[in-house]
Image (cartoon, rainbow over all chains, first blue to last red; front, side, top):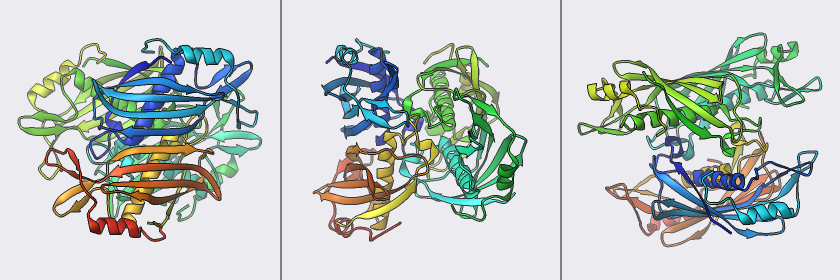
Length: 142
Length: 142
Length: 142
Length: 142
């Protein structure tokens, strides 16, 4: 499935006393790229679908950190779906600073409908949503 | 109204590249102390009251920063209500490291009921809640 | 002094369980706008000046919240310097969503040099830096 | 190696608009538990060792999310070292709410010395530090 790039500038509040981006913020950055991907597909995190609200809670997230990111660095975050299961979507992310790879990560989410009691129930990804995800958002940015 | 103290240890993720607690985190710390105060009064941020959900959205927040806080510092946060209006509550906070004052801040919140459309409508603070707020949470911690 | 606008999209991680942007994040947003302003002036938060590192620690921050901001809202943040003292700079910020004002805030910072022991010492704002701040960054974005 | 437990209460600012703790905050929580573990061993994140500063930058972090955590939940975070390599330490974490497991995660860090240019160079874990890590912090809390 196609890769999609977004770009962001590291903010001061994202750094820690080691002078680099705090590692937990890479997960925020990944999520923002994932959401830009979904927007680019015409979807949203909380999407209305046939009278129900559907959402993508995450079941797994991981990141390998190769080089630090610093204040005012421009990061390019490449997102692609590298596995599309019956209910689950796995996004793979690569963080670039120029040509240099800083980090690689993954987020796996499961499509769920929001029940009346606000609980979540996994559901198969409907065909039309699957098609939008497979086609991807185009070259971006969104 | 009585003062109430809670204590917290500065975490690594709260620092920034200047080597100190990022100033925005003082607002998170104030809110946590406010919520501990409310819990100590037998209240909560989202409280059920006569069949309605009531909540305290903030209309103002401010902080004066005198000395920095650093990683692994133990901070004592003193919270007191310094003004109780018809619908509004103003909390005043003082941050101590030992005997030294690091910062002083304020948060003003307005009691609102959550409407069916999830909008908020200010309401007068009911008598029994006013009494709980005036009596305060006792010496803490909660 | 001239106003300067930057724009940002609210990210999911910026929201809280009330369904709106957590109030502490408005301070992060203000700081990002301040830093964009400084960059637009050819300055930076940690700036080298005549062989010394100078920086702008904040001594005060405040915000009045008028309307909530929500996930995926595009916020325009207008920053201007509304007081330039001997050592201090006060930034005023207005948050817009379209034509609607969501919040107004202030950050006051004091120019300091970083001493050898990493302590900070206030210094008068040097003439050339004062001129850059007064001229402002141009219409933006940066 | 021994397990070590710390406890924390979920704060309002840790939640997101889905009404649960934002997944990136689990990584902040893990790090805080790791640092409590190190403190319990008599170590710190930035430790002086034979005239050098040594630190533990992370090279990998992951988390599996089984159940959500919510505002004011008390979470018990169990940390243990489950692999101690020549330069690397892998911490494994389990998040409990009462007896229920909410999430399991890992952080792998590599011991580095801070070079004069602030760069980092991996070094073998010195024997005395290895012994402290193997012995662990005792039953906690710290």
